Structure formats: C-alpha cells, structure tokens
Length: 193
Image (tube, rainbow, N blue to C red; front, side, top):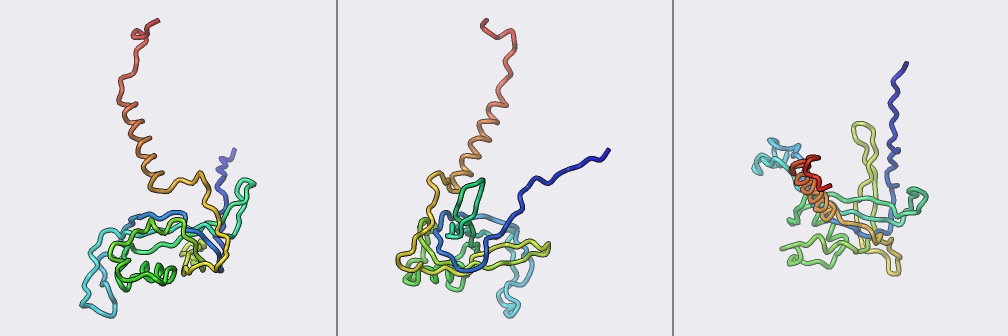
C-alpha cells in the first residue's frame, strides 16, 4: 500500500506587475543574516573596507493595492511590500524611495525618521517581479509616488493588527503557556468533592 502525502498548501500567486493605487498598512523592522559578511563593502572602492556586520536590519513597508484578489470568496485588496536596509543616509535606497514618494521632505526630516508616519499614507506604486534561483516569482515595490488627486485608496481592514502588536501578543501567549506548564498538576486527592 502506498503512503500518500498531499501538499494542501495553496498555490501562491504573486501580485501582478504594473502601476497601482495603494495605501501603506504597516511598517516594521526585521533582521536577517548578512550574506555579504567578510566581503568588500564596495567592489570599486577598497578603501570602504570589509563588511563585518553579522545581521542586516531592514525596514518593510506593506502596501494594500487597488488590485483585488479573492480570498475565501471575499474580494480583498492586493498585497505587496517594499524592503530596504533600515538606513536613511543620503545615498540609501530607503531614503531615495521615501523622497520619491514624498518629494517635499527636507534634510531635517531624515535626522530622526519615523517610519510609522507612513502608515495610512496613499501611494501610486510600481510593482515588478523578481525570479529566484528556484523559479519562484516575487512581487516587489520598486517606486512610490503621490497618488493622483481624487484617487480612491484601498481601505485597511478594521480588524487588521500591525505586526509589532501581533508579535507582542504571541509572546504573551507563550509566556502564559510557560507559566501554566510550570504549575504543579492537581492530584485527585486535592479535589474538594
């Protein structure tokens, strides 16, 4: 008799390429191992030294778009995100992206940049596809600009919980389970009846 294991995961469909009206629904930081550790920082300029960072911290900006998708029979806004190293130095990709989106920002706006201020802001974004070594297609936001005047922004669902809050709630659940597991088990003799 054969042992059959079915893949019940749904086929992932990347957000289509093109230009879309969007709204930023969340921003958060994430870290990942630095694949460039030990390599020259700049191939053309050895004076910039060797990259010694163990991890890279990135800012993720999640967008909902006017491209509708159907999930469990419900029409929902499309989802795509922009990711860049969490730096707003003069030549950084994140700074260039934000300045393209908000061209009126000045130098003083980047002295202490609050990425959470982007949440709820409308954008006109360009999405393009990247294909990884395994052939998976990933949709990425390349450019953001101000949306045309009068554009209707996709709504952020009222029950949406930001990643930072979800992470905090998950930690609390783990802590409660750890405390519950540390309590001694009640013995039958200790019951009051």
